[in-house]
Length: 404
Image 1 (cartoon, rainbow, N blue to C red):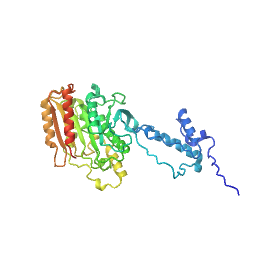
Image 2 (cartoon, helix red, strand yellow):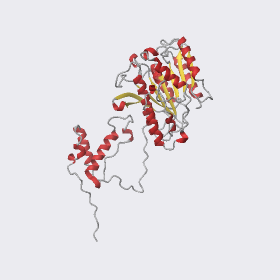
Image 3 (cartoon, rainbow, N blue to C red):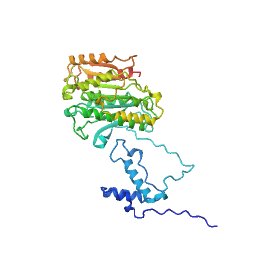
Image 4 (cartoon, rainbow, N blue to C red):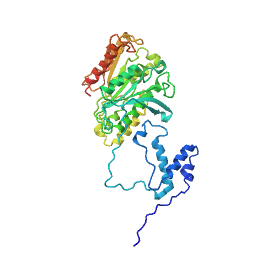
């Protein structure tokens, strides 16, 4: 009796360099061409392996390593045609491999692609130190904006780094700090009105939420914190958390968004916005007067993919164009009576106006809440240890008292 012998299939293209997919790429570099040829030259049952989880930073790089892998896989498929075998049968004794996403246990620099890859902003992300490397849950996400870049503000500002450390260790949140346009290694140029900074903040929020959901698939009732210091607080006040985000499993039941506005530049908004103060005034009024309850439609959304899609569509809308409605949020304003840019009289007027739009927490009215804390002896930069400790206490007491 003759035993049948399985022969390896013949490739459709014997000359790998002549593959139509490779020849069609007119502007391909020699290095990239060699990579595609190498990938297509693999055996019929040995497709190019996908990138490892820690090889993709999740920042929408152009090109992404996943895009490059798909190109290599397409070339391999074209060479072997129907003879390609991509999914060999797995052995019954094969061990199950659990793939975990990377954890940023230390401050990790990651680029964030905006405007379809035209602009890259420098960011630093860090997960809570107590979070295990294999953990699939996290308590929430915080995004922090620094003071005016033209005057030296950056993600390494002492007040920003102190607030980041507080949210990491006390609130156990993933914290993202970023440099605005033209600051540090971020591309682009700063705007005079702050319009591009507001749009960037809004887009960064969307990308960070997407990455959070990918990295922590088992998280539930996660908190969202939007924070800014000085000019960063001005930009943060325009950021809108779409209601559709609270239809996602990770944020469903997580309570209202938390906004932390440190030394809001109420006295110099006209200068930071190039005389477009009304834009920011209306944005803050909309945030404080909102009665839209986050997650009110959670029971109506049955498909997680539809919820994510709805969130992405909403989040792509610029924050200051009025098209994205604010959801009810908790807002904290902290400032000092020795601030060099906004006098105490201006702060008194500003906090009174804000307080007329939203009551202090806790509130049973269902809308936004507003709390303000005056730190005696503190200037705009919190230079003294006493002022910094008072700032920390103000944030902790407010955050811990919130129940929704």
